[in-house]
Length: 332
Ligand code: KG4
Ligand code: ZN
Image (cartoon, rainbow, N blue to C red; front, side, top):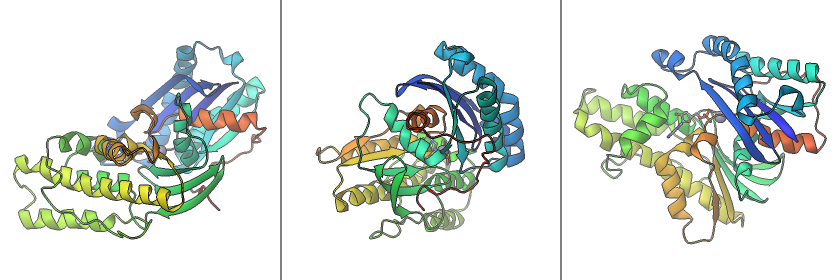
C-alpha cells in the first residue's frame, strides 16, 4: 500500500512515502535556524514556517519516491502529542489530500511513530520488546506487547533527556539544539573527568533536573567563563551521566520483564555515545538491539507512514473532523 506520511508536531516539516514497510522517500525541512536565536522553539514561528514549507515538502516526498499524487492510497499524519498550532498544519494538509483524493486517513501518535522507525529496518523487531523513547519531550520505557498495546515501565519525573542536553547547552552558551553540539564536543572530552550525579538508581523512572542543577552549581563555582579547554571534559562527563542511566535502566527493565529485544528511538537516540554504550551493553548477545539510523531517530515522517501503513491495512480510519491533541499518552 502506498502511504504518504506527514509530520509537523514540533519544528520539522516532514513528508515521506512508505510502501510494504519500506521507505521510498523521506523529506525533512528543519526550522532550526528560525528558532536558534531564541534558544528554543517559538510555537507561533513554528506554525508559520510549517505553512510555508508543507507544500514543497509534500511535492518533494512524492518526487523522490517517483510517485504521482493520484497513486497514493492512504495518508498517515501525526495527531499528537506536540505543539497544537504545528500539528494543525500537517493535519489540515492530510485532511485536504484525503478529501481531494478520496482515500483513507489515519492520525498517528508521534511516540508510536518513533518506535515504528525501527519497523523500517531490513530486520525489524518482533513483539514483545522493550522500547526506550528518548526525545526532547519524553523519556519513557515501554513494554511493547503489540501495536497500540504498551505498558509504561518507567518515565521521567521532571526533565526529558533531550531537555537535559538542550538546557546544558544553553547554560554553556553552545546554542540550540544542544544535543547535537554536545554530542560533537564530547568526542574530544574525558567522560570520567567530572562526576555528575546519576539519580534514582534503583528505579525505572528517571530524573534529570538535579543533573542540570549540578552543572549550574559547578559553573557558578568555577566562574561561568572557565577555560575553553575544559569544555569537552565538562560536556563529555555530563553526557555520560545521561547516557549511563538511559542504558542501565532500559537494559534492566528488559531483563526484569524477561524480554530479549530492545528498541531505542527518539531524537536522543541519535547520540553517538548512547548508541555506543547500548551496543556495548548488548554485545554479550543476550539482548537483541534495534536502533534506527540517525535520520530516522530525530523527527521524520517515514516513521509516521510506517505505523500508518500498518494501521490502514488493519482497517483503521479517521474521519475528517479529527482534531490535534497536545497530550496523548501511549498508555491509558
Ligand atoms: O525526537 P525529536 O527530534 O523531537 C521530539 O519529539 O522532541 O528529539 C529532539 C531532541 C532534542 O532535545 C535534541 O537536542 C535531541 O533530541 N538530540 C540529541 C541529538 N540529536 C538530537 N541529543 C543528543 N545527541 C544527539 N546527537
Ligand atoms: Zn519526536
